[in-house]
Amino acid sequence: MSNHSFSFISSLQDNFRLILRMVMREIIGRYRGSFLGLLWSFVTPILMLVIYTFVFSFVFKTRWGQEHSNQYEFALVLFTGLIIYNLFSECIARAPGLILSNVNYVKKVIFPLEILPWVSLGSALFHAMTSFLVLLFFLTLNGHHFSFAALWLPVIVLPFLLLIMGISWFLAATGVFIRDISQIITMVLTALLFMSPIFYPLSALPEPIRPYLFLNPITLIVEQVRAVLIWGVQPNWVNMGYYSLVSIFTTWLGWAWFNKTRKGFADVL
Image (cartoon, rainbow, N blue to C red; front, side, top):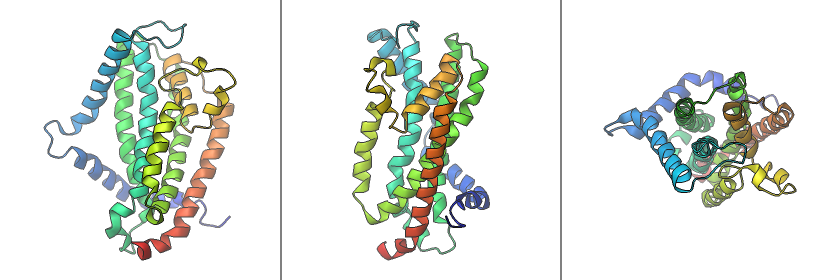
């Protein structure tokens, strides 16, 4: 393992201010010219949660399992899972085109191309955080009592973010050479959405099938975030330990692949 294997940490430290500026520019640029501006980042998840509540709680009268009978709970549990999925899908869907859409940066020798996935993650994380604030507000309105387990939320999300970065570096580099990968990723993300316990609890599946859902990188994080925020129980530290090891290894692989192939970006573009 070379000395540059985990140099993404020093790269993040060296370019943190630049990443922060680019993230802010991207967030502000998304809402530039709109009447509500940044308020849309709060209005959108609020509207979506209201729609979920109306459709699933009042129209379909759906309940999440038998032991939890609150009519609003299904929408809140669903919304929690979708926050995690949207964070993942927004970064992964954009990753194959990150270099292709920033050709001008490729020709600048001094520009650190490796920060582009960080910028994408920062923007997605901002919207995920606003959605979490909306979720916490509606949980409070629903009379939910938070336990100390909720404080573990950042610890649960951290390895998930590392996994996203590893995959993003790999796809960003590969997308330069294989243009069809964007279409493939779109189909994969759709499959991951329905093959994770977002619209249904794991208990709804036959027991022999349940372990296979944990091959989906979203499943464990969705389950653990719900565990600490909604059910008020401690995370499964054994599973999170394995997940963290896989995340670190994936980050290293993605970073190594990006650095190995980046010399050929300019030739292809």
